[in-house]
Image (cartoon, rainbow, N blue to C red; front, side, top):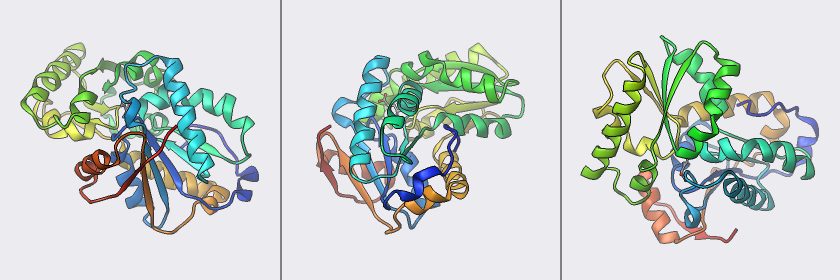
Length: 286
Ligand code: DGL
């Protein structure tokens, strides 16, 4: 994962702690699942800011402020690194946190996002170089994917479609309902109409894998649909392989703690849907 250029530096001085994983709500659980599979002995601390989700339609300023609070909280709980398992937060807050906030914090702490690893993976996955992006209005408006692709995969032509209804459908347990078909079909048709040569569609929001059965229904068979969990996990394993001090700073107790800013029981119920297992959650305030 290379959302930042970093050296091991004084990171080795950090006491071991869990990897922080943050999302506005439940979507980051689709990333957490893959992170746990890739690093089964590592400890994780997942935080969903459910009380203030969705972030996708909020201003830059608010997304930055909320994300910074979450990152500061996870650092205060001993996480040596935080993964922003949220495209909206990665698009709107990551750069500012890395450039303005991290230098003022304890040396060695790191915050990584999900957009750069996805863009890096796209170079290998898209055969024809015509890529479609579905994401929140915030991620699309930020043009983060356009900018990263221009830097790292300039041969790729990107068409984007903001899907403001998709996250609320997932957050309200309507991903499998008939209403979801209307919005998924409409948005995908619009995206495919923008470029009929699209060969790969990126689900640029960590909530969207929950809509995958419906998405596949409205995407032609020859078009690949890319989810981010496994890509981010592979990238983190690679990152830890190259940054030994951070690898040492990750505690290895096979545990995951679940935190939410809203109702823990509701969180646990939704987490069952995302993870397929029972979990316990605790409520915190940011
Ligand atoms: N899961 C977040 C993402 O990847 C978005 C959810 C939201 O709008 O809060 O963009």
